[in-house]
Length: 311
Image 1 (cartoon, rainbow, N blue to C red):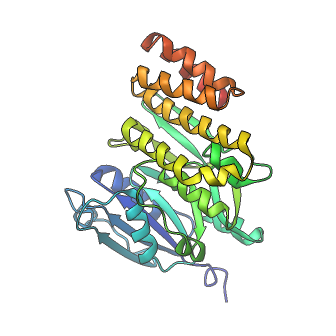
Image 2: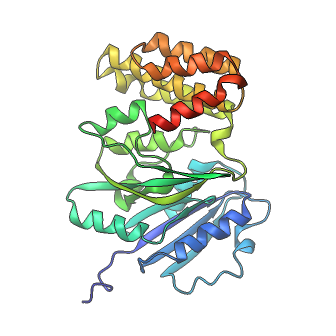
Image 3: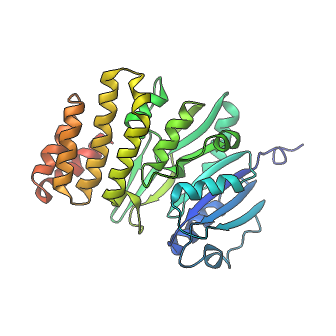
């Protein structure tokens, strides 16, 4: 057999909801992949304009398979991802939010990583943040040691759009559909307890920060996600000891506080930053953000500068 004939099938799962223009761009980024054995599953989470209609003129003849699945009601991102996993027939699954895009070599690089590294179940990449006036590169940090422990505090992997997962592992661990936010991190923690991750230190995904309906802009959902995350994983964190349990709670409060801060909800952000410091007073960034929140909009710019220097 030729190399092309032995290339495993990769299922690209795009979850879509009410962003037709971005959905077309996301699909085009799948079609432009240098890897050539791709099945595309688009899960329409009950958009006002059905995704099938949005993509009706898109030439998908180069794909190995193509399927659009539509929910009867809007059920949320994790439900859409579970639907996509259930509809997939590939050996590997790669997720793409409808307002993100893949760079052409993403799938090829990830498949190579799977082939050249034994006993891994998930491969993730860096990301380009497409801002209104700038582009920022985010390379995921190197994790030495326990990936689960790292993920309990910080999302060191990134968004769902950067990951490729072995299908057998994805099919054995459902995403928790209760989470209105932090849904990706919840899944990564569960996966990390079952398999090894591999990092590709290269930005192969474009994250469009100006797209509508970004969950990261919704503080109420972020705070609800925090509460669910702590409730679900606090027993696991406690297995690493009481100090680490408090550290996990501190980082969770900090991340929700940043969501409030960037939404201009300075009072809520201050409360969460104080909670973070009380739980884990050893992280300087918590105090930095608390100080920045004291001045509201006047000190917001300073926090942005500090955050960029840290990332």
